[in-house]
Image (spheres, helix red, strand yellow):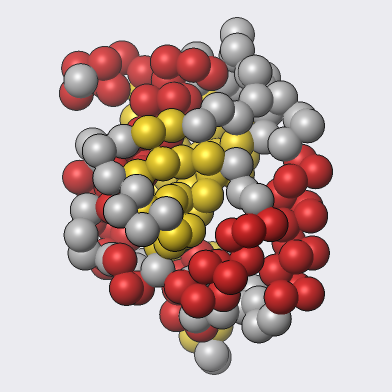
Length: 187
């Protein structure tokens, strides 16, 4: 049985994961939400102005009322800037699993920050929410995300072939997961 109690702030060595706030809009536009490559790899639309970002933040912030809604702003402690996001965008209460998604500004990629955020959210999911399984996926051409997933200890499960259609070609979606007992061995 899941123990959904809503989102809580999480602190890691270099990051604070917390609820989104309207004050994050400037950093979101500056760092990632209007970057076509980041948003493509994350399978999300590009947001180009404050009005669009504000509407998205309205959705995020109103959803925090739900006890099974988990979407964190990734805040770099050093600068207090919002450099991305991480979430359990799917919580399956019946089958006791959650699926993680994340995105991080290209400026801050290849520094271990996505791995740090993902590991923190995995820990929260297993220890606080009591997930039996956490899963994650990436597009076949997103090698950077694949490396993050592997560093977090996920095990490859399978490929959904030709899942995405973009620019006249199909891309596969690769799935990974980790069971609670496997995670406890990693700690």
